[in-house]
Image 1 (tube, rainbow, N blue to C red):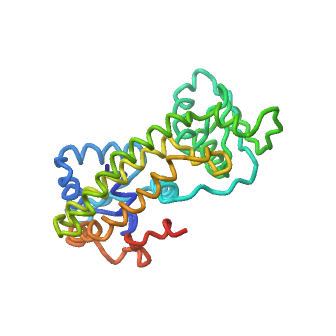
Image 2: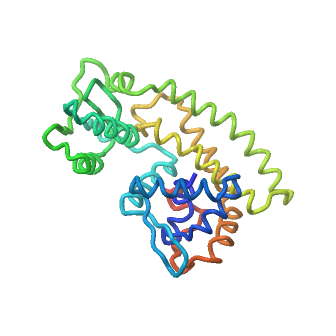
Length: 286
């Protein structure tokens, strides 16, 4: 949840927040001060955030690694239509020794998150342009002697879509999108009615928008973001993206007002991104 709040709010306000403000925001979800401090400490140990003292107050901000992850996640979350495909496949092959098993496991998680599919043991493929991400991972885990990266064309004997079927569980992803649609389309109608009648507070909109993004963000770990040429003709991901857009925009303004009320008391509002408008998210209009 802290990741979600950083990604959807704090990164637009200078990436830094006083711990007291973060505790106040998370109180709306039923989290107590101790649990927030424990989670923040864990995020620091994992290299996502850093801290600094100002007087007797501790402020927490994203590390460069954290900023890069948030930017990458935001582009994928708010991308409403699949990219066009250049017809090329990106292929990463590696043979990491058994004594480096932990690195292998961590690398696997990172590749799944970036949208790679496991074509076979030690061989990962993606139709998306992920060369930058692959190079960063190879450097991060220092696996240069064990890895090879290719950009190639598939020459058969089957169609390109056969690679998709072998590398990603599309039916499972489709089912997850259907569950999201069923749950959140009902909530969207209820909240739309309540807001039209003035029956939702800014704090409630903040909670619901954050929950919505938090739930939709989980698809980053499941949906590889395949180009339209490789997707089924009818794909629940399209419908889920449109529902997410409508629901997000319904809650956006009121949610941001609540966040700013809490944030401006003990944080510096001058770092707010002047071009940021949650009600008209720039990535949604692309």
